[in-house]
Image (cartoon, rainbow, N blue to C red):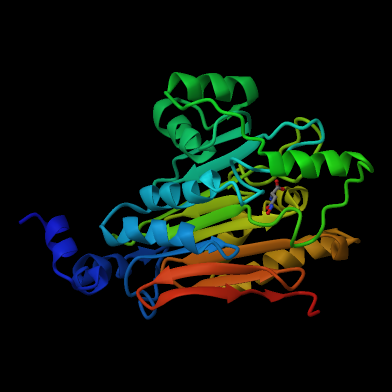
Length: 329
Ligand code: SD4
């Protein structure tokens, strides 16, 4: 019986049987520094905010010995299709002109990456980003070009503005004040990081961006290094919140580099938030949340305001973990 079927039929947790490949991955050297193996006990996935359906889908892929790349794509697609999530994909809140525009990116273990920005009328922006990575010589496609490419690749065209988001937008237009409400109005952008049974890391990030943004505005989420960064030797990081501030500090790249220098994911996320606070006088007006994972499977998260959490699915279970915050209450 082939190994995949055997694992599925065995009734045993995949992680117990994957020890060989897993242990081998743990012994790799990273720039002369031995990677800690103490907490690495099987595949795992983390995602920004409390998104249990998305992490469950990703873990299902990982448990079936799928790649981290497939896991993060399939995982975030759950939120893109969920019309109740008004920060991602279909049902997302529109820009101030009433158009839902999507930003997404994906990055794999070989530092290959793809992104789409200002994509309209296509639900699964992350899958278009993956196609950009795999089928084109480019990293990022924008607007009309991104949509044309998506249609050529066979993605269906559909209106992403739901009646609920349309009604809220019409209500917003009465005052047209751009003051994003912390933890509410731009909640639930999904950034996801996974480690597969080979110990390889991939990440994805997808969003409809800040509600009622100016037409054409792009945030951090599709920008490799800002909203997402993965280095398979070290770990990965991803962000949610006011994207402009994450771009200014190249937040996710910074966090991965801090982990490369020896910081834990938790310490690195804290420093990522501190960097933003140091450059932003009105930091109390914004929310930023970072999550990170290192090669050993250790995770961390930090944010400016209380209220941010992340979902983690590993051999230890499936939990929602509230992130510590710079401002305590
Ligand atoms: C952006 N970072 O477009 C995104 C918004 C976000 O939860 O994270 N919302 O700036």
